[in-house]
Image (cartoon, rainbow over all chains, first blue to last red; front, side, top):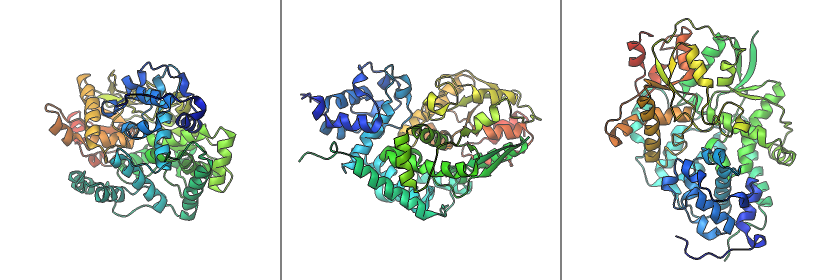
Length: 198
Length: 286
């Protein structure tokens, strides 16, 4: 997928600066051994493998990396982080990449995965807790997969596993403020590394 | 002497994993562990908050930890995912700058002095005294821990990252036999069941397949997400992988309850989508 590479001096490598700042990891420690890829349960679906993602961050290949499916398919099992001989928390790097894509409002290569996260948090913002029926319903209505998982519903309802009404946290003002202030602070401290080149 | 905890059930234990909540409460009560549900708790943010906003991912669990801190009680958690997020927040907020930021978000003072423990540690520690009245002799179980319960080791402080033993010891104390296997901490597909169900079916079927190859008759779990992925997708596994044989998946608290004399109904064994009753009947436990 990547043919020619321009290696950016560290000061201009906005991608690496952002990831190092938000994940707290030292990216240049990666020497490309590939243990992360070997242990990753979903790497068989990634267009750039975890090892290649690490390389792309080192090289500052922001546009190429942001377009990939890879970091959206990370399920945060942290096998990579546990096995990295250089003690890099690679899962935290994947979190940073998702965070960057969202801050920059990029269209996600895995729109269903991104949609799941968005609906999940929308429900927590609304009720303080996750409402599973609502989550499934919102996902099916907006993902283009209206019948996804519906074959499981009769058995789940019959066993009382899916209450129709949401449980809520009472002090919702506090929850809404948490969402609001976290977003404000994060935008303020995002720094000059974020933003897309015209 | 009763040990007292602020109990954080988490969202799924009140809905799709009710049997985990109810078996936890009954078993702990019988074992002299006092669990008082944390007042007005909120979602820990689970798989989504940290994926899109690190600060939100720390602040949501911090609100719950702050409530427990004000009570002066340690927090007991059953759900592995919630445990992971609460422990992660405790650990990350050891950094004074991050704690200051989170306090700004919370709008109140959290000092990060509260202890968070998983039910496996609480029930499996030497201090815990549960009485086994009906040994589960002859049952062969595979203890499945999943990813987030044990990783990263220095943050979760629960057990070994690759070959944990805590649940195995509990299951063995009930009279059952645990098998040695390689998939104890492999990933089941985690939060992908809505967006990528085929991935969950693939990863989870590999886990159940190896459990069977190693002689297990059932899998025992401590995580509602693992349970859901392993239990409710077995019909899809059968369709996708010919020769796949169904296998019951129990919460460790359900097996504890049965061995402590509770009935199958009290432990809600009938709440699973994959039949969990026939195996227990065939062994004469219920």
